[in-house]
Length: 429
Image 1 (cartoon, rainbow, N blue to C red):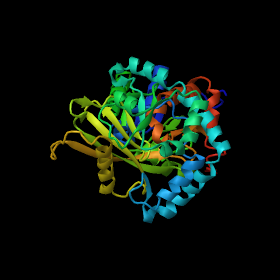
Image 2: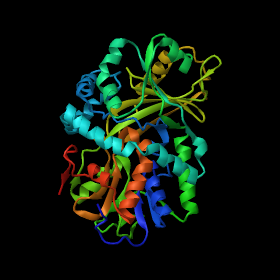
Image 3: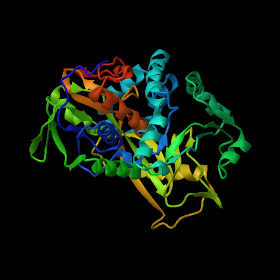
Image 4: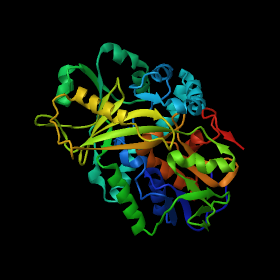
């Protein structure tokens, strides 16, 4: 698919200074293009700040699967479940949840998995190149990823997901209790078995990665404007700081806030914030004398426990509550109890400075895929949002694809991620 719009001239406007927007900016800068990056916050202070750091190139299983959709809806009535909808937000969330169920049949799941494979397969080599270019290879760790199960029955419930990974060439190793402890000492007896993904990697400081990308961009001449964007204009210009910033190309990478900018243009995409939480301990010790070696995932509660440059981050949960509701202290308590259940012998830390907490907004679409490429009916506006739980993983490839489409020839795979794809259910005026 060729870039069939007008030749892009002048600086390219990029809305969003999270990991996706920064990755798009870097890929364009590598091609000699001038960029302006707009965000109300400093680079990397949104969802990119608090993610799990995982580079999950094997995450070809969509959120909506035949079993997961039904299980997720059952969780809605349990206030301690990994997935909750606040009562006052239920009516707002219903259209998203309906579309989520619609795309959970096996045929659609495999169609989405095909698309996920396209963007995930080049993840690690693309990130390795980018990290080398910005001098950040020290942040990449080839740790693998360990999934814990409390019983054979619990593992059997995930059989479809593991078979799907196997069908798409994702390597995994089943582990009994002894092999599990050999991989990660200190795991509770509540988890007698697990599955290890040997090819998974991780970033030990996601916010640090964003800072280094921003530093490299500034050194290459990129302009950063720290101000909220009031409006997108059809010709690629944007309004911010009381003025119009002209361009004939604008890339929208504003994460969960992207819909607020698209709605005035008559574009309605079912984008929701799945609010995520984390608790970060300032120690990496998970048992006396034992450090956390790599990401550990509790399959029953969907919690990630991951080593960071400064301690251990316990993150997860999905909360539908919109962009303005206050954080829920109960979710932090659930993360702490999950950590204690998995690593019961972790040393206690001083209450006053032993941990930090965070809540942020994952931009999620019902079919798991982000919206990428030129927006239908708006040849100067380009989308790069909706990466959900895989924003860090997908961002380097997203940057490459968008830069190719803007400067050269769009990769054929980009068509799978358009706003007009059938599995999305968007309304485009």
